[in-house]
Length: 268
Length: 326
Image (cartoon, rainbow over all chains, first blue to last red; front, side):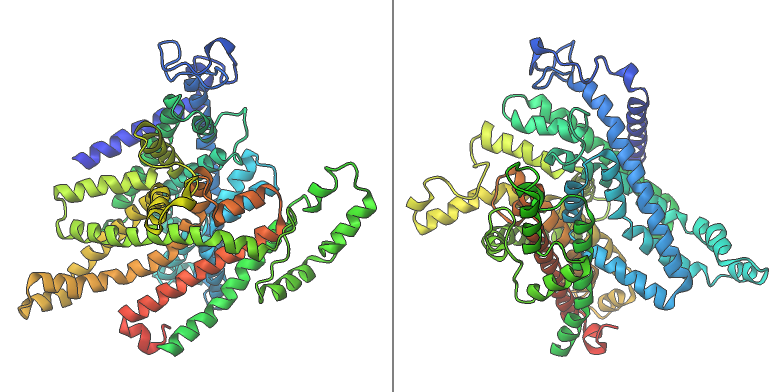
């Protein structure tokens, strides 16, 4: 019962943040870039419910607009990771042999990599734009999906329906895209849902370090950067954006766990 | 046993080469050159001087030649000199590494010593209050941005309560402390960084340990052990925990890159002069030789961690030892 309630609350929260992102101009009470020299660092009050930052900008409006950044980076980065992972995973699982061991060796190498180091290096060399961040998180996060797809396909490809399809003259491409991947999608969906949370965490960490989303574009991470410089002075700059990150990631993690219970009941 | 370790080490060589290769090419394909800082941003430097500088660093040669010459020097830990202050990269790394290792190994120990008992206890008392609280803690642990947690704890312990220092690893008057006082001083400085490094890992390990234990407890040999009259704690500690920790060892090995990567964030926040902060600084300055040095040392630490996990695995599981792990 408690579990179902938590999943329900998570879904509602995810939906709310989605609405924030889509209808940001209607929900945010102020322009997120509007500087107001008369109300710098004011605490939460009726006209600024989450207070204002060092430039007098409305923190709530910035968080609302920041949800656009966090969500789009979360979804697109995971999308990239899933596509790459499916590509390598299905080829490795379907063809086996040398191709399989070469790809899996590559996966091992990537898993050994201190990924955050790589992300940091790439982003500092390229322009730290939103697109770079999406791409880099995607390109360093596909290994889990590749492993899952490969494992599923290894068992699926021995099944009768694949043999029948082959006899009927279907190409490898057709079999992989139409038969194997659709049947292997369950665990990937779970992995992707959990991945959205992970990507949001990485993005906020990068923005917090000053090499992610660049000001003045608001993101949950770079609002927290302001929070660090005003530590002990303006608690609202640290608490609110942090809570938004925490609850959003938490909601995706709970949803992912619930999906796992539904899609992979044999684990329980 | 020795031949097994040797075999594993040989197996790690291609992985290591792969890691250095990927990082080398990624970094060098990116636009911008290390000499930019000394040259194009400095109007006094002529084009010829710039070419001379590039030649000095070997930047005019094709990429694969640069890689091989770098690899040859790496064999003797010669990473060249930093483009920023012309000090030896190996020296810079050597002075930064101990504190990072200290923080990460203490965090790692904490993860083991706290995470595994939590997991075992949750598994043995499924759906108890403890298990439920632990589950909630796990979800929160997975979802908390560690830099945010760092900010909150800095605010609480450093500013509001004024119990712990919030930056660096030594107090200003460190030199005047007794040996004991020095240790206490460092311990107080790294308490928060260690706690934050361990926080997320703790959640992961306790969760994996829980599911591994649940899996093991259903197996036949546990029933056999019970049937032959062993008492409950003997069954649990001698049979179940030992078997359940096998997958945990692998996961611990895989968690090392995360710990090392996390030190960038933690060391930046707490102004700790470690490997992570050195990496951040050199990335900001496009200091190729230092970036490559830290990346490969980081990769080596990761591989070393994996090797240790392999050895621990073979120690815990005789099947691996006997057949050579294939």
